[in-house]
Length: 332
Image (cartoon, rainbow, N blue to C red):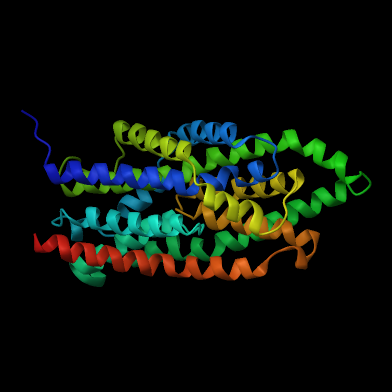
């Protein structure tokens, strides 16, 4: 009879809980602008985002491969059955804290930080895949917000040039319907990048427990992660929607369209390259870029400072929690 270790079952459950919190925490990425501009009702926007997150999660596995074998060395951590569980607890803890305070931090980097912290506690620096971390984590961490800001700035600038002679009410009426499409593409790209991260973690756990021979994502893992993220998105994260949709600057439909479209382009490109970037960082940076075209004083830069502090703290904070969880679990 086929037997599955109880600890592996707990790890898979914890991973799906993380995926659920990721959907609840990051649903704001896809719907904050479309809700704040009142193009869609919150209920309809959440349902649309949940469905498209589900579809996006099934479209690729490049990011999953990075999380499964590009952060830690599988051959070094193969003997540690509690490592993945400790990493997930660290990520869930940080997600819960930032969700409670309405801070749009990165679930992606919380997961990466938890995994790195637990790995360091288990086997030290030799457990980390340094070259891959620099290429697939550190560089995207720095580049994606800058790319998002630049893309939002350029796209909004092009729209301003094209519609220079059109009055603002007409422009917003034009982009009200366009923003529905841009929000949909953003939700699809969010599922494509974020759900794959949990797929990679579960696949790593299956490899550690000897259930699979290499980092290849099983179909049931794809479906389970896609459903968990869609369910979390359905729950929603209204505190973060408020921060992103209202506290940075006053959004209009044309701004929402530019921010969502530019973010979807950056996230989609990163997903094809297998880079687990922060969808939160990217869409927030896009909103700042779009707002800057209006006038620099229109953007609440004090909010940006608080967000940057949270972003910088995410990996070390979740890493510390991941390490502490590993040591505690190791006692048992």
